[in-house]
Length: 349
Figure 1: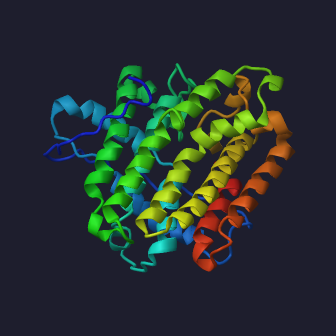
Figure 2: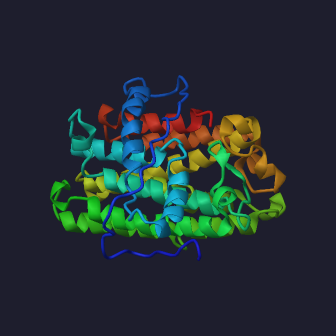
């Protein structure tokens, strides 16, 4: 099956789901550049377990032998840890517009959590497929053997496909339309699902991945910075853009406000990739949880390769500064998103 296969399930699958305990929340290392008016470490400490717990029960399948293997493969990758940046960005964007302050996260985030989890399912699908021998051919992800190493290439492909289709099913079934903020509530949910679908297609993750593969091994003179930006606007920034836009839409934002949040997300999405390229050549495999130095080994087009290490660091900071400028119309209520922007370029993995 191809990366862009999308299968929308029309009916619920009754029965008990397999339960896989949530993984230990990751440790985040934040630099002094992080926003001083928003306590991101505390927010992550409180919110990440909620996201992990929700992910651990989001795939509901009949507990029968015929579905056990693929469900285990899906959960193996989905619950392998990670920064959960996309769900967090969705929730923080929702906070900017919804103004809900309930301390019970299940109540506070009852509207956007289904979309947040759907984003993580799609992201996990992309990681499973990226790691395949026909793609990036990697055997380590988040400090664990990749899905195809554990379950075989055939099951890994199908697990990724199933996560993709399940993401749409979960979003639609578990978003209460009456809890969405703003006017035209059904249209807002349709808008979110449409954006989720578009982010994966030929002008999204799949298109970005194809161009990335085509640029691999080409001399530096044949791959320019604009090529690299196109790749990662569609491959890396796509889901962050949908995450921030979806949170805003569900929180009641206007079209103009959604556009500003999208611009912010595009900038931090590119900054995320620049930071990844830097870490690939400066951090160890143990620190990264994946194979370090892989980009250079396969002669991949990266920001470090085109701009040099110092130039890449400058580019990451420039993009982060521009991202924050997109939020200039808001005050401290947008500091959560600003803190995420800082975290993206100061992280250690």
